[in-house]
Image (cartoon, rainbow, N blue to C red; front, side, top):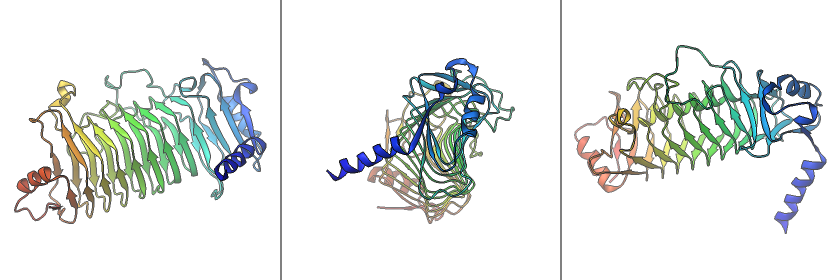
Length: 366
C-alpha cells in the first residue's frame, strides 16, 4: 500500500507540475528531411526557469543540424527507440548538451526511449574511414551538468562518442544500446558518481574510455565486438588504439562487476590507474572472430605505467576450444606487485608458473 501511494504521488507530480510539450504541436516534422533545429530551440527559448518541462518526441524521424542545449528543468522522452528517432547528418553536431547553469540539488533530468542516429548510422562500422578528419563535436549526448538519467536509448553512428561526460556528477546510464561509435561512452575531466548498467556496447572502436575520473560503476553490461574502424588499427603500445572494451587512463577507485566480455583485442586496459576493482565478470575468448582479427590475442587485462593496488577477483574466463590461450595478461616493465589477482585454481596455477621468480608481477591468491 505504501509503495502504491508513492507511485501515485510521482504520477500526480508528473502531470500536475511537469508541463508536457509534444514537439509536433510546434511544427516539427518527422520525415527525416525537414530540419527541426529552429523548432527545438524556439521551444527552449520560451520555457520558464521556475517550471519543469518534458518534451515528447512522437513517432517519426526528426532531423536536426544544430546542437540542442537542455537546461536543468527540461527532459526529452520518446515513445520507444524503434519509432521515436532523432537524426543528425553532420559531424560537427551533438544531438543535445545536458548542462546545468547552477548545481541542481533536487531534480534529475531525463533522456529516454529514443534512437539517436549520427552521420555514420547505417554505414558498415568495419569499412574504411578517414581517421585524419577531426570530428570531436560528433557526439550523441554530451553531458556537462549534474543529475542526469539516460535510459532505454539506442545511440548509433557518431564519429566521436555516443555519450560523452565531462566534469559531470550523479549520472545514471541504463538499458541503452550503444553501437557503431568511436567511443561508446567517453568519461573525462574529473567526472564521478556515474552508474552504467544493463546496456550493450557493440561495434565501437573503444566501448568505454574513462580518463582522469573516479567512482564510475560499470555493472551488468554486454561488451562485445568493439573493434570498428573509427580509430586506426590496433597498436599494442597505444592505449587509445582500436579494439578495446574498457580503457582506464589515470583513473582510480572505479568498479567493474558482472559484465560479459567477448571479441575485443584487449578487454581491460589499466594505464596509470590505481585501486580499481574487477569482480564477477565473464570473459569469453572465442575463435569465431574474423580471420584477420582471430590472429590477435584477445587479451584479458593490460597493465601499464605503474598501475597499482588494483584487485581482480572471482572472474571467469572460458574459451571455445582448448588451443585458445585463457590467461593472456600483458605488463610493461613497471612494478605491478601491489596488484592482486585471483581467478580459479587452474588459471592461478598457469599464471603462477609463467610469473615464477618475477617479483614485479601481481600478487596471486592461492
